[in-house]
Image (cartoon, rainbow, N blue to C red; front, side):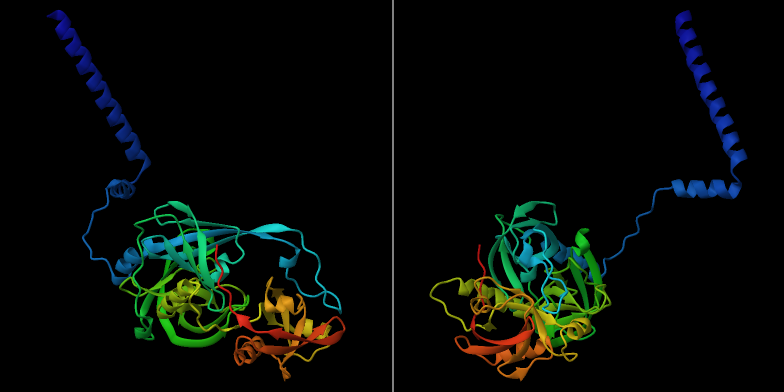
Length: 386
C-alpha cells in the first residue's frame, strides 16, 4: 500500500512540475508578445475553414481537358548542316558548326485512348528520341505515325491503352470574345493552364517562322510561350478546339498574340495522315520542294548589295527532296520564282501554290557573287513515318 501511495505521489509531483513549467512558458510568451501579436499567432494557428464553392467554368474546363495534355520531350542529333547563322562574307558562306544534340520540350494532346497523340510537326521533326509524359507522370517512348509538314501537324503513338482522350469541339462555332484556356508545357516547367479569349477566328496565310506557314489559324490572347507548341486550346466545356502552334512577337516573348490550328482542320489533317499511309490511297497534295527559308535582314541585304526587302535566304534544304536533287544549297538567296521578283516569304509560298505536283518551277538564285537559274520539280508533300 505504501508503494502504491509513493507512485501516486511521484505522478502528482510530475504533473505539478509540468503545469509549473507551462505557466512559466506562458508568462515568458506573454512578456515577449503584445496582446495583439498573441491574437494574431492564435489566428495563424487555426486550421482553415472549408467553405463550399462551385467551381467556375474555367476550373471545370481545365479539369476535363488537362488529363489529355502530355509533355513531349525530344532529342535531336545536329551536325554541321544544322547550324543556321547570318552570312559573314560577300559569298555569304556560313561558319562551321560543331556536331551537337538539341533537346526540345513541347506538348501534345491525346486524341484516342489507344495511345494516339497529336502535336506539331516542328516539335518532332528530326527527333531521334521522343519521350511522352502523361499528366499522371507515366512515361512512354513515342513513335511518329505520320506528319503533315505543310500544316505542321504530326500524329504520335505510344504503347498504352485506356488513356484519357480529349473530346473534339467545333472550332467553326467559335465566336470572337469567347473564353478559352491554353494548356501545355511552357519552357519545360510542367503542365500549365493560361486563360484568355478568342481574338480572331479566321486568320489566314500566316508565316510564323522556321518554315511554318499556317493557312488558317485561330488567334488568342491566352498566354502561349515556347513549349506550348502542340498543346491544347480548349473552350469552357473542356473540348479541344485548337492545337497551339506559334506566337507573334518581335522579341520572342509572349505579347498576347498566339495562334492555334483549328480543331476541325486538325481532324481533317489527322484523317489525311492515316489515309495517306495506305498504299491504295492517293490524295491531292500541296506543292512541296523541300526548302526552309526566311526573309533577309536589312544587314544581309546591305552585305549582298541587294535592295532592301528583296529576296529570301535558304536556311535548310531537306535531304532527298526536289530542292536537294536540283542542287540548291543552304545560304542560296532566291531572287525570283518563274521570273517574278521575290520580296518576302509569302511571295514564294504564293508562287509555288500556283504550280501542281509534277510541274517544274524556275528559281533565280544569288549564289556567291553571281546569279544562277535552277529548275525544281514540284513533288507531293512527304508524310513521315517511323
